Amino acid sequence: MLIRTETPIPSSEITDERLYWNRREWLRQAGLLAGAAVAGLLTPGCRAEGKQVRRKSNPGPYDTDEPWTSYEDITTYNNFYEFGTGKRDPARNAHRLRTRPWTIRVEGLCHRPATYELEDFIKPYTLEERVYRLRCVEGWSMVIPWLGFPLAEVLRRAEPMSSAKFVEFTTLYDPEQMPGQKAPILDGPYVEGLRLDEALHPLTILAVGLYGKMLPNQNGAPIRLVVPWKYGFKSIKSIVRIRFVEKQPITTWMKAAPHEYGFYSNVNPNVDHPRWSQKTERRIGEFRKRKTLLFNGYAEQVAHLYEGMDLRKYF
Ligand SMILES: Nc1nc2c(c(=O)[nH]1)N[C@H]1C(S)=C(S)[C@@H](COP(=O)(O)O)O[C@H]1N2
Ligand SMILES: [Mo]
Image 1: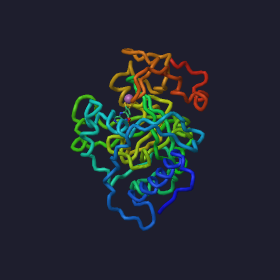
Image 2: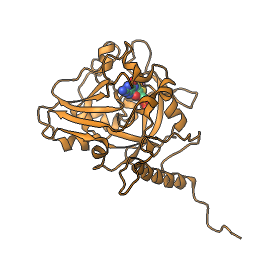
Image 3: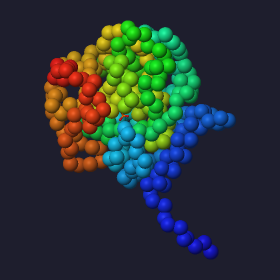
Image 4: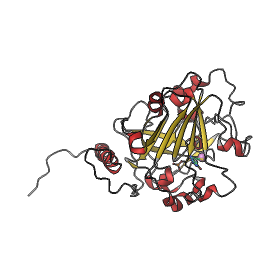
């Protein structure tokens, strides 16, 4: 007969252990562990995680300790116009996207431009979990345990020239796989951009997973940007090109509605969207509204990037 004498394991540690396993599982799925089977590569985890509150037991300097939005909500309430304009459309339609093989081109004003297969692109970097808020300009927010690595590491490897001032990102363009690209809303592939110093900031990551698993297609598989102090639309999904440029890129939303969406798009409760206020937000899974924080709560880390700038003009 088994007699339990040990003290029960705190649930926070169980969570951590599971995440550790999931991280290995992600690497295995992506074929990045030695001798790993490549089977299952196209099957991102879609297991619902339920509504339980989760926190990291050993939060790093960039993590928020707020409870995580459920896996279910994170993966079924999305913006990904390539797969429809409704929040439920991406989860229904994004399975059309083939995420392997996947090629990423790093180019423009750098000394080491290169084209990578996804696995080679990711291989040099350590995947870390970062728990970040994501705030949509539409007034909702989530807390998401991303799995990724700093964009800065990719940019430094490319050795940017001194003439490089901005970084431009482009989503795959393939209207057969992404039917939303045939509709008039998106004109060509989705494009986003960051100033070089924003792109090099340690909070800016490229994510390849969430909840310790590969990104589901609707969340931007196989690789997406996450810029936690900016509105969600800056966090471009399913990236195929990263380009160093001299001039400020013209982003998809600036082109579509220049009065509503500026290049900077920093989360700012004091600058209203022309059609609605940005003072409050609704955390998905909660009912009460929260006050929106300047720079989405990351002011301490990023406010210095905008010193002396009029954030009403550069919205
Ligand atoms: N290619 C592409 N990237 C995109 C979008 C899009 O429509 N197409 N939507 C953006 C918006 S508005 C938000 S709020 C976030 C949503 O990310 P999530 O679905 O992972 O929560 O993705 C951003 N990245
Ligand atoms: Mo958004």
